[in-house]
Length: 205
Ligand code: GRF
Image (tube, rainbow, N blue to C red; front, side, top):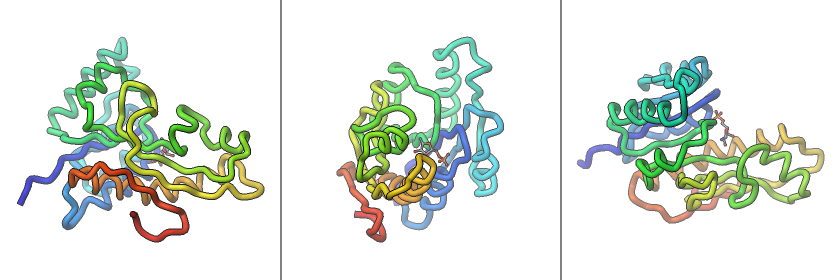
């Protein structure tokens, strides 16, 4: 029986994606959560992680003089947890190229758009402003260029009449909660083929 892949999940907020990832890593899943880390001391997701029995940590970026010092502390905390794989789940700090290089190929992120469209922030407002018929989310490998790494999975949702950025965000978030666990299971099993989920479809693939 192979050792499970040790997964650290980085959050800054409520952690709804983190909860789905942790809940998915049971039974024959090839990975197990070893740490939930936040750069925000009072992030709602920390209490949810503790309630799920996952160790937590805070590395507050405001406590460090610069990004390099913050990232050195972040790396040390991840290394002491012996993390094999990092999942960014609503982690709102942009990581520098040197840090990304140390975890190249071992760090995933979920982004609320159909990459390569709408890298960065305010993805739903931008999709609505462009009059897009569909929106969605993507799980990608993290590379030094923001939101530009290889896409490992996408889920699509229709844009509906009367949609606001908030209503679209809610519909996309439901799909994030399906897509990220699906991609994590595949990546932890060594399968990096891209997967697409349609909102109407039950299950992954
Ligand atoms: C998600 O929409 C994710 O795509 C984005 O930040 C949000 C985090 O939500 N990067 P949560 O903290 O996982 O609920």
